[in-house]
Image 1 (cartoon, one colour):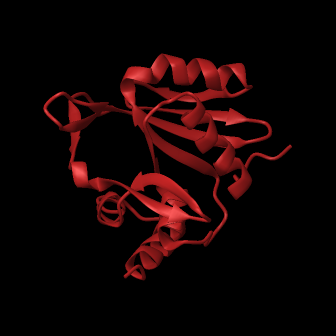
Image 2 (tube, helix red, strand yellow; image 1 turned 135 degrees about the horizontal axis):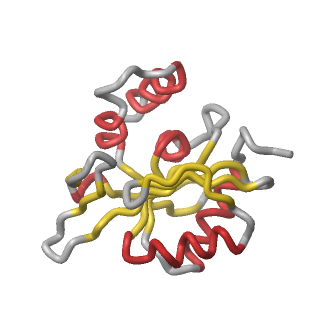
Length: 161
């Protein structure tokens, strides 16, 4: 039973799933760092996906339909799900507001406000992947006690020219 290592094949499966659902998304977290660097640098426990919050129910329903089980529910901020084959998936609904701003519900109440330019794309293995920018990744890797994986990801982000 595979749970603690989400492979590149698993990543592409999830990205394909979001594209088939026609849900706007951006890859975040450790896999987001790796696609920015152009290669897988380490093993990943999960996949982090930021997506258009207006599709939250559709996304959750589809994930449950294919066998994901909810592990952590901090909605409307985030939800972590687990699949016996595809491992962990951490989903983050974001609001693409009419005025062009992008916000995400904060677990303590209120909203995080994000810069539009933080939502970018990169080419990885011949595929265009929407992802969180290098600048945003570096910003998001601050303000808390960093793990060994965080330090590794920061080093890799800083190596991008």
